[in-house]
Amino acid sequence: METAKKVRTLTVDDDPEFLKLLGKLINREFPSDVDTALDCASARTSFGVSEYDLFTIDYQLPDGDGLELLGEIMARNHSLFESAKDGILILDAETGKIIDANPYLLDMLGYSLEDLLDRQLWEVGPFKDNAATKNAVLEVQKKSYIRYEDLPLETRKGAIVDVEFVCNLYASGAANVIQCNIRDIRKRKQREARERVRAEDLDRYAHTVSHDLRSPVTSIALATGFLEDRLNKLSGGDGDDESTELIGSIKKSAEKASDLITSLLSLAEIGLVPDSVESVDVKAVVDDVLEEHKMVLAEEGTVVKVGDDLGHIVANPVQIRQVFDNLIGNALEYAHNEQTVIEVSYLGGDENGGRRYLVRDNGPGIPENLLDRLFLPFVSQKTGSRGVGLAIVNAIVRAYGGSTKAYNDNGACIEFSLKNLSQEADCK
Image 1 (tube, rainbow, N blue to C red):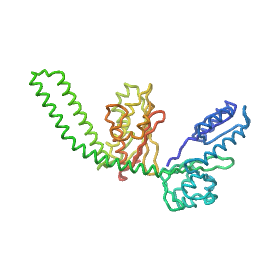
Image 2: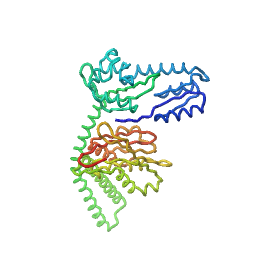
Image 3: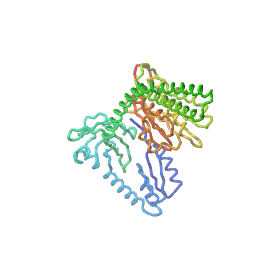
């Protein structure tokens, strides 16, 4: 469960100095990204292209009335509320009672607005007796934001809908409200299930094929060596250029095939749960990986920022090292910038008991056409690369009950989670 999120704020006032002070005040009260506008025209431009959680508006502006501008914003937000393709619930922050719901949510769950209004969230059908929803209201009252990645809700007809459930606490006039965004994730879960099956099939296939291919590829390499010796003897030690080139090509291809087979076999076996686990200091592992790469880091002037406390996890230390070594190595290979910066950070725990980590860089990012395939074997941004590093990361993470996610945010970001393999070891 996440407990921190920046609030998008638009402040509108014709006094630039006041805007600066107001922005500082808002950021002091809660984490916020504050945009500013000096008049109605620039404010309309801002909220026309961006979504905001909070507005502060001067009632008298150079080109119009601030109250009229506020009315436009409210009308626009209501239109978005009505047409949104996610379910939205509005609750009274103090009582937890439902004060509004959008059409998409009513259609998703099969209830009318009258069925929900003026009732506490945990008292109505889909949320009834669900401890998570009652805890959600209590948590958001304390911390302003919570998120559940996977929460089952029951429709009026008894069907189960798996949803992502996100709540934010907002100020609305004289009262505070809680907005709950409820996203149907059934299709996403079905897709993930299919991907898991394909990954398991690929593991079995990789293990079988890699063993079967190793013998003939080794035979090719040996036969090529014998052939090279034979030609050298027949030619008195000076083979012709064409024969030498052809033999060299065969040897290189055999070596490449052998490397691919080794990688494929490693990938098939890497996801197996290890017999030996212990409490692993993650920061110590990362520091060890950076020590190994220190010459490359120094040559390229790359800066690596590592969180002060990455915590401990009950795991096999070799596998945890493989994860961070592949991710940091991948960033070093692709994140070329005038001043390359790589960050390794701990994002906190998730609701499934996992520990969330992020490795990011400030490079050109991941090509859009690779984002959905990045963790598949032999997918690479560079021609000639084996493309198994991130696939190995994904296999290890899955073995630890976690998940991987790649996205761009001013550079490439790889986010992943890991669960303890055993609770026997003492871990922080």
